[in-house]
Length: 242
Image 1: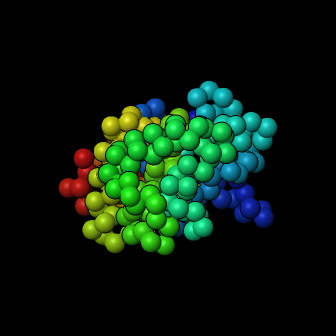
Image 2 (image 1 turned 90 degrees about the vertical axis):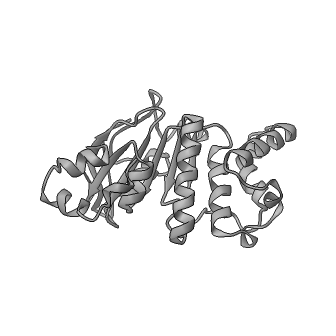
């Protein structure tokens, strides 16, 4: 939940004061053109940036500089292109935070096995280095890392942006299946209209750091808030919506 949150860099507003509720068990997609403030907003939600104004609440608890590191343990965060550490195996990338928190080896091994099954990844792949993985495998490993500690919220920044169209389409369906099977609360950044239609229960459409309109994508397309929304959504092939 965000209340009147804003953030500027060197006097330039990246996110202007906005409020947004994230529905539990649903996927909210931050959608907009490059530079609209989507990734900045996601990093504010993750506690990686501090807002200039307003407040951010995770399950009713306010995220502050003092408790941010603790709350971030309840947030799964996935970067564009996977963001895996090249000097760690896939398994060690997934379990890195769990190891730092002192989770027993047996617990980590069991959780790895569970998550590999969830994302449909051959467990043998987890012994490889990131450079030995395909793009789709890296994305699955990144998703496993985000889900490792059973977070309250999963935040994903353009998680499928670097993939070819076929792999991207396949993984969109995988993400949708994973989120539904786990009842995951997720916030996903994308600039792809069809991806937003496949994955998003709700879309938060941003422009120049402003939250322009929020709702299911078909609803936004049918009732755009202004001419810019109508133009932006004009390229959406509505037949891909759920």
